[in-house]
Image 1 (spheres, helix red, strand yellow):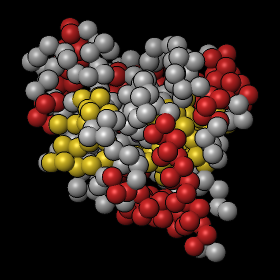
Image 2 (image 1 turned 90 degrees about the vertical axis):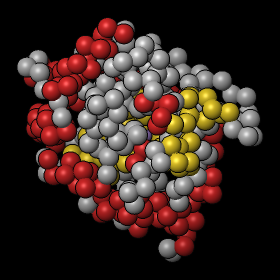
Image 3 (image 1 turned 45 degrees about the vertical axis):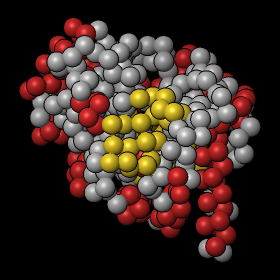
Image 4 (image 1 turned 180 degrees about the vertical axis):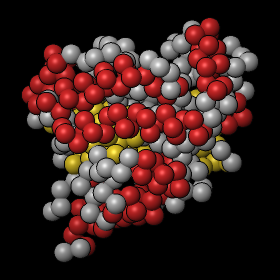
Length: 351
Ligand SMILES: [Mn+2]
């Protein structure tokens, strides 16, 4: 059978989901993790990296994908201090490569790297989901309101956030593209030397919010992105749930295209149900539960020769599980089994 590199995100020792449990999910090959003990823009220690790797390996899991090595806001803002932060980023790439990491997921979203209106929306069956209602999110605009964004209200102080939002007033989409290219020119040569793929995560949701620019949003912009620095190391984390909430995105077609191009390094598989214009619910992975056809997505990847990493993205909270919203064990494990089942069926149909 054509191998599928199925991975699972793990938030380190404080994650309520243990590595032992992850290793018990059928055909799980590795974890996706990161060093969480240093602030953004600081160098990761070899010890912290080795600790993740050793813990994973002790449970028969590989550690070849990092999500994320965050990009400092000064890089996204294009401030003069960015060179220093890019140098630190290069050092982190080298250290991770030395530890066997092959793929680094990151994003280039200003300030907030995802937004939802509710992290525990109660579904009819008693499970809970992350959901997004555009009007409600816009109503929480931190430019004018007290900061009360679910998941973010403890990450920033009110004053710190206002100051950061003010700095972004001079960064429009074109400026963000420029700053992104500058960053890529700084790190991609290092990736080429070390054999590491950079894989940018799309903006979630894929449209500008609170006046902040967002550009990793659709097929045209992904095309522009991969050509900013034309190297196989400059690739994508293709997140079906992030890009899929926008009806303009033909997800199946995009997966096929970027896989054929050799730039789809990491696939996040997640389903969403579009409930209105710019409104959506996260759902179970199964195609019939949402707006995306997961079978067609996996088939496009298979037929285009996908050989990157895949992971089930967010799940619902089911069976009474408590934990990090979107990152419980049960529904993501069901997602992994479902994706593996689809892959096996496609593979056998091609024999
Ligand atoms: Mn994702």
